[in-house]
Image 1: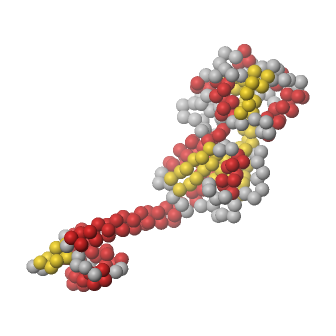
Image 2: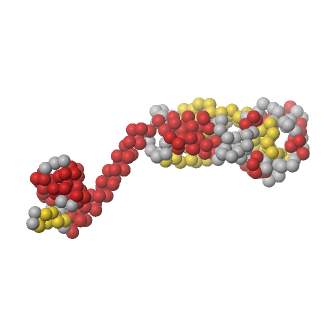
Image 3: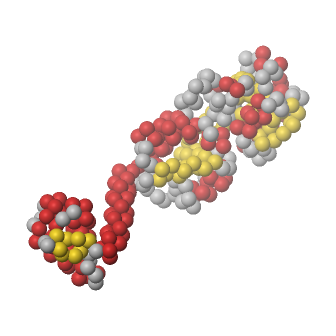
Length: 305
């Protein structure tokens, strides 16, 4: 049994006769009959009864035809997959992102990417920067977005973005009257702090000590997006990554520049010692382009970045 025999058998089923199969495949009718006979000999049962010069499929032949149809569907899938691999290197890309960008910048990048690569499946996973590095290093994800606080040794990486910190405040907070927030304005203010050990938290603590300012920390969280959500609920004020604040101003969060030079640095991570597939390069380009785009329907506060 070989593929050509199965192809001819399928053509007989599709066309309804040996003569029609010969037309579909552009071969002689005797060649069709000979191929069917060879296929029957190889599988050990009759596919057709010969009745007055016509081929009438047997019950066994009908069952076999169903299996052949399934095999050809699989072959079609293989052909489609091979074209995707030829064009893109893969039909699936896996992205891991820190929370600040996973619900803001990355979705915009996905939109840009899908405009050119609609047939490529995408997995998006949001995690801590340390876990993202491990996931990419182990080859479980193709590309990662992580904060600069992690050890980048042993992994392919490049700088991604440097966003200047902003101050986020509840609606109607007295400090909303200020055009920019200075450290001393936060003295004894209920404050939403980033988690201990966070590099930006350490920079902020040093600035507060320098200005002899002591914000009243009411809650700590590792994510700028959570800082924004808590400030929106009136828990306190906070300093956050402006990318994480995207979309919050439309919900009532007040965003002001922070006077000090505090930046949220991030890196693109790639699987080590692996040549980047075309879709990985395409997604990296989309992520870089998305840095300058606003979320759909959002008002601009990018002058703070």
